[in-house]
Length: 438
Length: 192
Image 1 (cartoon, chains in turn orange, cyan):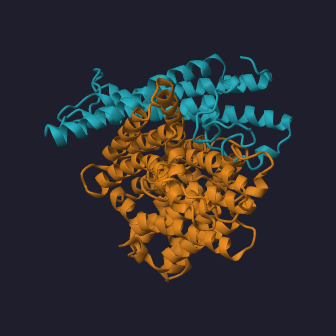
Image 2 (cartoon, each protein chain N blue to C red; image 1 turned 120 degrees about the vertical axis):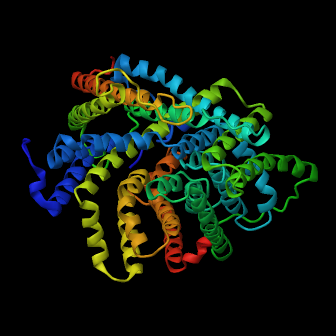
């Protein structure tokens, strides 16, 4: 090799350390993740292999951008963006009142169920948490619900958006791991619902066993006419969920097509509700552009660096290190979960998925475990990353709409019990893979 | 890891990092143009959704699937993905770790802003160079004749060549945008 600096002289161990240090140092300056990974990838491509390796990176980036399955990501984001701008969520929340009115902690339970339905219409969490923060949080606080419980329910419930299908986390995982996204969606449904039920159980436990956590039950009867009017708010969302998930599970449409059907569904809903306008559509589309731009560019950087690292032999190197820890597959999986947990506190899920899954998934496969199950496990783990400090995005989303006297510290404190519930859910998934129905 | 400025108190959806946010003032005139051009690519995503719906309709109800939907939607979304990087740069909404950055005093933060923009320009420039190699092979045949690379399907549109050219153009524009950002941060003025 004749070029200026020859990094391959470092050997794979030294190369890994240098790459890691470069990544961390550049990231800590506040440089965007996408450009950090791109830069480090190119430095290593040139320094390790020379200019001949450049086409490798560009062709990986090209195939990442031009992927039919990936088209479903902007579609699901667009669907959520339109949904967030319509009054559908508010009506849904009002309608759920009929079912949750009679039990202690009813409004909190109602919030969880609204989150589950919203989650089944949306694959991202930002809009959902903001919506719940605007609709559910003020109502719970006004009625005298415990502040920590209310905050926790909104953040944890809103985060279900990426756990219950359709979920963008699962789509990205499926793309990186080469796993059927339809199968991932099927497998994630019950675990997602289980997590939601953990939240409900926790709310009920607190409501019935701790004094002053929730207000006394409101016994006023809702008139039947009012009930029917409220129920209408439930019809459209349920219909959209049924059509989207039904067409995926029923094998009628591919995930990408189902995502477009979902967009059509919410657009028709807004037209029926008389909310459709050019401004709504424009804002939703622009938000989609910004969101997918952010996700895709992290992907571009990550796919470049993983490509280079793999070519250096780094993936085999790390695999060897991880599998060398123990012969017991469960220990290896737990180690991976610990790594994801730590990364989740600092990085966002897109970066984690695209950087670690190309290394983890082959290990999982070689140990004879199910990559679909691991995808659901990963998704569940990322639920924790949404809530865990110092950078749980859910907390920041809520902070942007919460009353000013609620600080970020308050929010993170309120999230502790919910993080524990999520860790229990991860543990159960590891111990009983059958929960995914596979 | 969050939106670049988690402290701002906005109540609209743009407050989330999944929202649009505003174009950074330091992005200058170019930032405003990119912001406007975003409409075109956002419309492309909506159009892609409409085309996909049309395909489902044609296939299931008229039993006549098309040959052009697949490649057209991939092209429309691919273009939006690539452009989205430039769009997020102008809005300063790329994901970044602000663990230390948020602790920096204003002076150091300005220096960091300048350095980040310059290093990012370098990364984009590097990649523009790499993309140029890709473009050369996608646009010119070895003999030197112009021959746009096609998908090779029954319809075989030249979308691969077009996207590769577009990746190159966006990378060059990114270099320019980062340099403008660096310049405006260095000037310390907020009007541009």
